[in-house]
Amino acid sequence: MNPSPVNKTGERVENGAYLSELDFTRFQMRVPTERYTSREYHERERHLLWMRIWQVAGRADEIPDPGDWMEYRIFDQSFVLVRGKNGQIRGFVNACRHRGNQLCQGRGKTARFTCPYHNWSYGLDGRLLAVARPDYEGPLEEFVGAAKHDLALRSVPVGCFGGFIFLNPDPHAAPLADFLGEVAELLGPYHLEEMVPVGINVRESLNCNWKVVMDAFQEGYHIQGIHPELIPAMDESRERYSFFGDHSVATAPFGASNLADISTEAQVAAIRELPATFPGVVAVLPRFEELVSEHRGPGGEIAFADGITARRLLQQATRETLTATGLDVSALTDDQLSDNQFFLLFPNFFLTIRAGEATFISSVPHPDGDPNRCIWHVTGYMWFPPEQRAEVRAALVDEPRDFEYFLALQQDYEQMQRQQNGLRQRGLEHMTLTRQEVRLAYFHSVLDSWLEGNASR
Ligand code: FES
Ligand SMILES: [Fe+2]
Image (cartoon, rainbow, N blue to C red; front, side):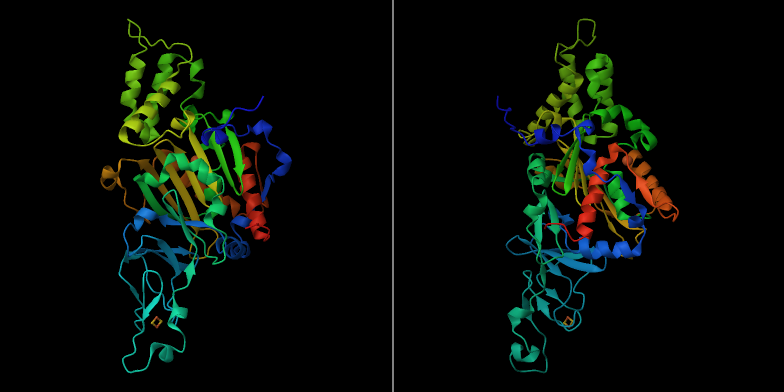
């Protein structure tokens, strides 16, 4: 018999392997600590990874109109992202073609870029428009000794996916679609491009290597140690793992998936607790309560028919509520309406997502060049109808002092910097990963292949 057809891409993740089904001879479970602290290793990452790989440089809705621009920096390299007259976003090396002056800093809106040093100016498409030459009467080509069209700003590859702007510092990079591969199909049904930052949107320097951040969000093993309050919400034992190119995805039932084994009242109570961690559930609860009440007996007690659980009712309420507000969830599976899928797009794009909401976490090496530091960026995303997006949008909080993250994130924030202190100890040569940290093992193998120059892209 043929296997049943996979109609929804979410099923590919839901049918991923259990830990017991993975071939662990493929995974390198010892990771040298030197890669978190060594300047020499950091330099290799800079040249062999960061200067060659697609990376998130911002959100497309940060530069919504023609002429809107913003700077993206990685190490000491600076790029300008600008939306052109035709709506297309382009990326340029942030250096004037005359004597290399940095063109701009931060973000803004302009009709043209004029270099403040000698006033050369460039269009939104990067073309050289004019050269100031107050005392020279001859043609521009004669004045500068080169053809005008050869003096456009240096461009870099830029692409958009899910509302994110990706940039690759390598002018010869393969297309973004090749880099994303199957992940683009897996994320498509969530309509991430229609989500806006809500609640948290913070960028802050941390005293740890950028990989400490990425490691921390690729395993649920530390829930028992530092997030005990999340234990009831996650079912780690039923986590599924999938690997797509350099990237990986995991999913685990949430909201007490073993609901069928506990009392109906306890199931419903567990769902009511979810908004503390997943704010998107708030909007769904009224419909959920209506559905629950349909199952109440004469004495008010809840009696679910066979096959009904509070989890199922949460999924139904989520589908109905989001559809009524205008979000097309038709391509999402029932499980995607309750459970999170945890995406890691190598090297620094982490996203936990369920219908209508997501949390994005990324980290980059600190521009000061110290491998013991990085900058992380945490953003909550939620889907809202277009007319409500402006009012709910959370502005970026840049380098706050003493920012209070929500509980689980505050726990991670403190833990990651403690870990770096240990990784700096010269007497410890390597980390020992458990099987539950298999995605870290995969991540570090992918990193190795990039640093050995074997990455096939
Ligand atoms: S360096 Fe830009 S105009 Fe001279
Ligand atoms: Fe954590």
